[in-house]
Image (cartoon, rainbow, N blue to C red; front, side, top):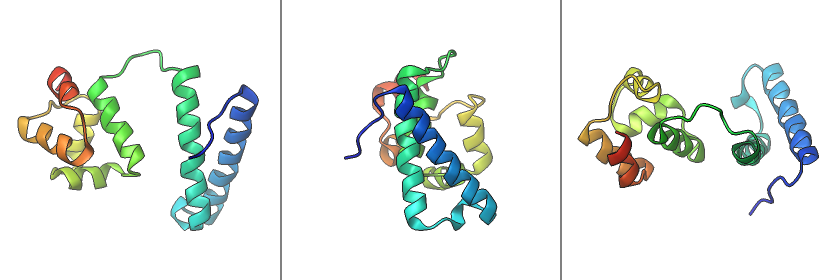
Length: 128
């Protein structure tokens, strides 16, 4: 298991490392062109940063917990919006509307979220 970030200095150093990887991917024309080692490093560093920022730099506007959980699962599984939509059996436009809070979740969608993204039933019931 990776060690986490413990200090603000470590956080800044990790941010600098991820900036270098982003610059490298940008110069190559696409982050997908990075080596597997660089991609894995990017995922590891971004996870560390996200964990630190959740505690030390929380977002001032609370998001819908269901939407936040869907986004967390997408990040954990390294899924893009279109891949998540396909996994859930909906089109990308519908997925976008759900993530922006513009469309509600049907019972069928709730079951799919539970099965495919392991979203807890209580969150589905309370915030769908």
